[in-house]
Amino acid sequence: MNIILLGPPGAGKGTQARHLVETRGMIQLSTGDMLREARNSGTEMGKKVAAIMDAGKLVTDEIVIGLIEERLTTEKGAGFIFDGFPRTLAQADALGALLAKLGQSLHTVIEMRVDDEALVKRITGRFTCGDCGEVYHDETKPTAEPGKCDNCGGTNMVRRADDNEDSLRTRLMEYYKKTSPLIGYYYAKGDLRPVNGLADIKEVRASIAAILG
Image (cartoon, rainbow, N blue to C red; front, side, top):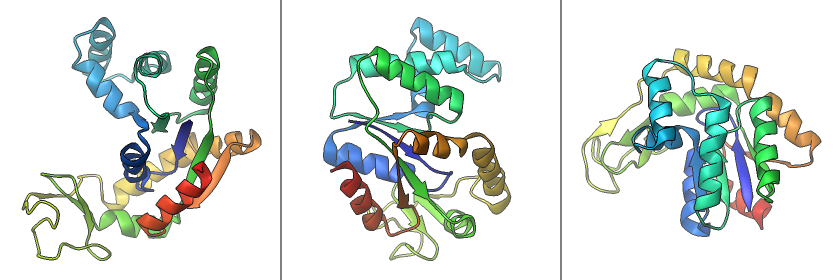
């Protein structure tokens, strides 16, 4: 089972992907993680990625598809979760061609729908434990004891530098310009399944579980 999690930054794709990895044995393919791993791998592909990134350039779609093909052919699990890829129609076509080449298919595309204003409120109040990665929110999920993680007891609370309103609206505009056309693309293919990305985490999990069966 191969799926795509589609939605704007802050919609909760990473949170839901981790849950699917833990409960279903799926493998999460995050473009950012793959590029960082490749850069540090020392392989020929890794050296190429490192040179491009060190020069401040964007890694080409061809290289990203190459990294994905490597993972699809070498790792075994209950399926793959594409998180952060594809971002453009060209990447969607390339991914479809790759899956066909490998004799695989895309099971479904889960669109995590959100309201922009509610999303801004959610993201600007978000912070995480720098030790264990647990996510909190000023209003909806504060720590029981201020400054102390409920999960591990750590006190290293971190807020992302770009978790502010101006940065988020810029990222949202980039998403709508480049990635939102994928909604129509996958809808036309009959692959798109929407869920309410702003619902409670457990509700979102249940909605995704119902779609995946």
